[in-house]
Image 1 (tube, rainbow, N blue to C red):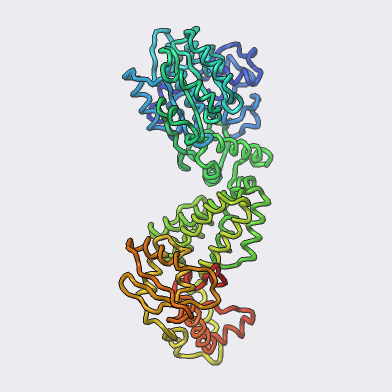
Image 2 (cartoon, rainbow, N blue to C red; image 1 turned 180 degrees about the vertical axis):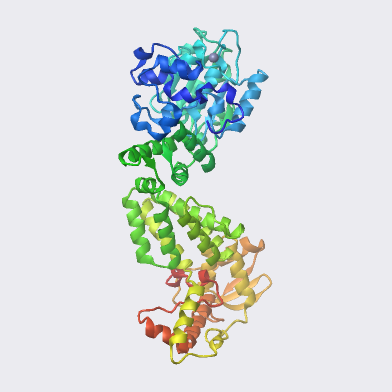
Amino acid sequence: MGDSPDNPDSLPWESEAEEAAPSAAELEAAGQNSMFGDAVTDTAPPAEVAAAAAPVAAPAPAETRAATPATTAQQPYRVLARKYRPQTFAELIGQDAMVRTLANAIARDRLAHAFLMTGVRGVGKTSTARLIAKALNCIGPDGQGGPTISPCGECEPCRAIAEGRHIDVIEMDAASHTGVDDVREIIEAVRYAAVSARYKIYIIDEVHMLSRNAFNALLKTLEEPPAHVKFLFATTEVEKLPVTVLSRTQRFDLRRIPVELLQSHFAEICRKEGVEADEEALHIIAGAAEGSVRDGLSILDQAIAHADLDTEGKVSAERVRDMLGLADKSAQRRLFGHMLEGDGAALLTAINEQYALGVEPLALMRAQMDLAHRIALAQVSGGDAEGASQDEREALGEWATRLDVGQVHRLWQLLLKGHEEVRLAPDPLVSLRMALLRVLHAGQMPDPGKLAKKLETLAERAPTSSSNPSSASKQTAPSAEARPDWRALVEAIDASGMMQEANVLRLQVRVVELGDGMLRYGRDAKFGDEILPIVKDTLFRHTGKRWDVEEVPGGEGAPSLVEQEIAQRDADAAALRAHPLVKAAFEAFPDAELIEDGAAPPSRREIPWSRNA
Ligand SMILES: [Zn+2]
C-alpha cells in the first residue's frame, strides 16, 4: 500500500489484479469458496490468472474501472477494513519502529516467549499478532524456510493463519473468556507440542480483561513456557496489566497513525477500488479516524456507499462532512467562534446541537483543544494555518492573527483543565457546558481592530467627530497602583498554573503590607471562608519558602486587584461613554454593550467565577 513504495517486488498483492484476487479467507467469508476452489491467487501472475480463475469477479482493466466505479463490480461486497487487512509487515502502515525491532529479533533468533501489542483501537494490534504468527511459522514456498519478517503468504502455515484455520494458532478474545477455566484450558494444551507448525501460538486479544486468577494461572506458564509456545497479547489498556505479566513480555507500542499517512493510505485504497475521492474528503476521514486505520476505513466505506447513491459517484468533502455530522469541523469552528466572541447563548445552543448529533462531550472538548493547538501552530509558522479545507485554513489564520500568543496559551490551559473536568465529571455534558462557559467568560476576546474601525467609520459620519480620540480610554488608574509587586506576584502565581489560588488572591486580598517573605492583608467582611491557609500554602508553593502571613481583621488595606480593575473599568467606561466616537456608536447601535480593551489582558477583565464568590 501507500507506505511501502520501497519494496514493491515483494508485494504481489500490490498488483492491479489484487482486487480480483481476494484471499481465500475473504472468499470463504463471502461464501464464494467453491467458485474459486482453494486457489490463492495472491502470487499468481496477476491479470490473466485472476481473470481465468474468477471470470465473474474479474474487473475491467484499470482504466475503464476508474471511469465506472465500484458499482459495476459484481464481487460480493467486503468491508474495506477486512479486504485491506495487512497481509505483510510492509503493508502495516505507520508502525515502522516496531517492524524493525521485530525483524532484528527474528534475524538474531532472539525471540521473546511472549509479545504484547498495545495501542488505541484500530491501529493494527490483532493484525500485527497474526502477522507475527505467520512470521514465526512460515516455512517458505519450498517448505524449507525459517522464521522470517517477510512471510511468504504461500506456504500452508501462512495461508492457514491468514484464513484463521491454523490448528496451532489459537485466537482467544479475553473480553469473552475472562475466567480462570479458559486460561487453564490453554495451560493444559500448552504442554503438548505443536501439531503441524514450528510454534504453537496463542493470540489473546484484550488481555487486560482476564480476571486476576486467570492472570495468575497464566503467569506460571509465562515463567517457564515450553520452547515451542509463543504468546501474543493485545490490549488497549496496558495499564491494567499486572506488572508480573508486563515484565515477562516483549512490549510493542503501536502508534496512532498520523493523518497524512492515513490519508495517503485511503487514497491508495480508493485508487484500487476505482473510487474517485476529493483529497479534502480523504483528509476529513483521516482526521475523524483519530489514528485508527480500521475506524477510518469504515468511515470510508460509508462515504463510498453514500457516494454511490449520488449520480456522480464521487466521494466529496461536502458529502463526507454531512455524513460525519459528528466530525463536522465547521460546526466545531462555529462553536469555538461563539466561545471567543463571548456569545453564551449561541455557545450553549451549539453544544446542545452537537450533543444531539451524538458527539461525546469529551470529543467535543478535544476538538476545541485541537483548534487552539492549531492556532498556536499557525502563529508560530507566521499565519500559515494547516487545515483540511480552505474555510478551515482561513478561520485558523484569522484567529492566529487576532489572538495574541499569551491568549492562545491561556485558552489552551483553560480547555485542558476543562477536558480533565469533563473526563472525570459524573455528568460530562453539564461539565462541558460549564467548562466552555468559563472559557467564554475568562477569555472574552473582543476584536479591537474591528471595533476601532467600526467606530472610526461611524465617527466620520457623525457630526460631532472628534480630533482627539487618544484621551478617551487611557486614564490613569484611580488608586493603588502603588503595589506593583503584588500584582506581579499574583500574575506569576497564575502563570505557574495555580489559577484558582491566583483568583482568590486577586479577589479577596487587600494588601496592607508586603515585604520579603511577609504579607499582611485585610479582606472585605462579605467574604466568609477562611483563606489564610490557602494564601500561605500558595506563597510557599510558588516561592519555595515559608511566608509570614497575617490577616488583619476589619478589611483594611489597598483595594484588591479585582477591586482595582473594576474601579479602572468604571473610570474607563465613563470616560469612553463621554467620547463623541462612542456616542456615535451608541446612537447607531442602541443595544450595544461597552466592552473595553484596556491595559489589562482580556482574561483579567472578567473573572466571573470568582467575582460572586
Ligand atoms: Zn509462508
